[in-house]
Image 1 (cartoon, one colour):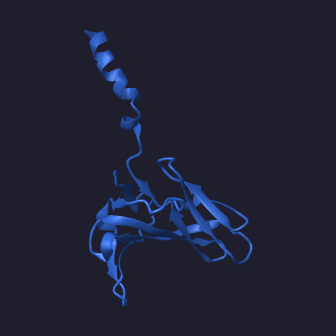
Image 2: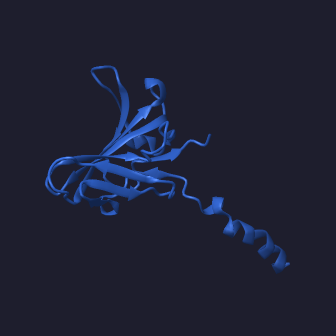
Image 3: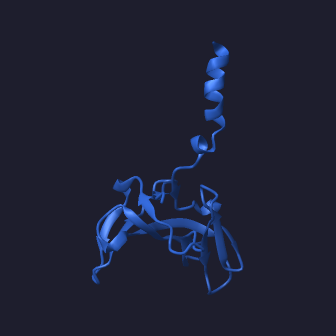
Length: 147
């Protein structure tokens, strides 16, 4: 009997999909590495990286997360779209934006998670976006849309 239970559970324990990361979020400041004005951080899934570039002044360590910005598909209210960027401040007080998997074309489609943390904003020009300013790790979260 015990052998049957182990035989049934063991494949699940080693299944990649059962342990897969099912959400991403703006990386924490400690996860961001900067060299010569180029900043990178790994994605939670390992499928790419976050990338940010600063063109002025010497590279400075990232000190704080400021916000995440999401653009809904079709410029309509909704929870599916693309990550615009995550904004950070350096120790020198300079703003720096990081993009999610910038090498992907078109941008990776994502769905907002923890939607209550993303505030819908319509700009004066009519652009609809969502902003997350909660600084807690993992709160400005999203998941890739399988397709």
